[in-house]
Image (cartoon, rainbow, N blue to C red; front, side, top):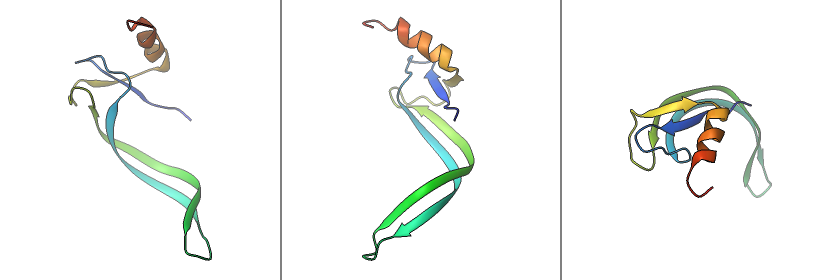
Length: 81
């Protein structure tokens, strides 16, 4: 599974983002005798990211997608690491 990483070019945030997405899934719904639902075997059939904004500064126009290598390099360059 490929994970999308983001970076805010306004404040440098690499870790906290609000992501609005529409997801279509198929899942097994298992109800206990008491009526408690347990959702199992969730398969994502389609997913569309509609909006990403930075949780730190609130900016949505400065958020970019980055590769894992870029994220690792930026994390290594953070002060105090």
